Amino acid sequence: MPGQPNIVVFFTDQQRWDCSGLHGNPLDLMPNFDRLAQAGTHVANFFTCQPVCGPARACIQTGQYATVNGSYRNGIPLTKSVKPLAEHFKDAGYRTGYIGKWHLAQTGHGAVNEEDRGGYRDWLAANVLEFTSHDYHTALYNEDNAEVELPGYRSDAMVDAGIRYINEHKEEPFFLFMSFIEPHHQNHVDDYPAPDGYRERYANRWVPPDLAALGGSTQRHLGGYYGMVKRLDEGLGRITDALKSLQLDENTIVVFFSDHGCHFKTRNAEYKRSCHESSLRVPCMFHGGPFAGGGRRDELVSLIDLPPTLLDVAGIDVPDSMHGQSLLSRVERTGADWPDHVYFETSEAETGRGVRTERWKYHVRAPEDAAVVDGKSDVYEESFLYDLQADPYELANLVGIESYGGIRSGLREKLMERLAFVGETPEIAPPPGTRGGQRMVADSEVASLGFSHNIPGRSR
Image (cartoon, rainbow, N blue to C red; front, side):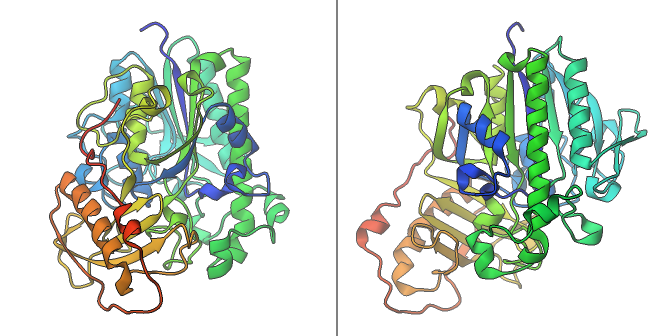
């Protein structure tokens, strides 16, 4: 198909939104992201729909929420009952390539059998990259399941592989998905191994307010984490330099986002799997093609909206099986409807569901004695309510305060609408205890919740 744009997905792992200067980070960690986002389209309010590695990846490759596609926790392979993203691109004439971490295969940490690769033709990946490699040793597996060792710091090695792929396939439209492990912690040492000298550069520097208030492993880990983010951004710059030198920049769309954030053991015993902004909110931008000059978009956008957006920008029909809607509809046709909230699911550390509006965060989770089947529960208890306008760092849980009953009721109805869409009809119980106090909620605040009533439909 003539005129098809190339697409490069630059996908990171466990990266907080506030690493970006556009979100107030003063350390200049992501100058290439910031520059590309300002020249393209910056998705300023972007949220994962499942804050854990495997389920988030399944949502991307299927366009469906995790409890619908079946991969609601790590270790569940990608379903074969849904046509995956790469197959849509392949059928449209694209060369498809995948580099990096997969985390959606049947078994094992390393090689991935062809039938488990989600339809990607060209392959240089490991199922669970953090278990087959470390900072200065990168082991991936090719189409023949042969181990390939790449030299250099791990994210640099993958960037090198991506540049080689782009150069090799510059004469045909390509869809390249680059799935980095950075800045995810290195599991076997529970650390964030930055390139030599980078941890020292960022140690004892600016700390996000939620981490400063709550502690966790922040002081031990943040310097290394920042160093990993910095090197990733330098790799992003090298990718865009390569596109420019190959004269592909005018016909290539670069997409940057992450699977989930990182709360540095402040919300539970590890780094994610919670309803808080530090787990859910991640950086996102589009550069090139119709996204050039798109500016800052303030809609609440979900990771579930990425698959239809990628297909839409390539001129590929979005299947009805996908749950999100294309952001291109807002960039090009600003009158298109858009939900006033995002829906998310949590798993493993808990079985939970939630919605996030511009102002409010509402979360429910299954009680410990609930019967959870296939990641779903028949009953949930209200567990968290945050007023993000008054408490942007989510330090005061309002769920048990009597005066917020009207807010909880309105948000509960939004959540129940979403749950019905994904096939759940649970009971949602009030929090175990309620309390009074001086906090009051105006009737206008309850009324302002409203309803968008457009969950199942998509505007394209």
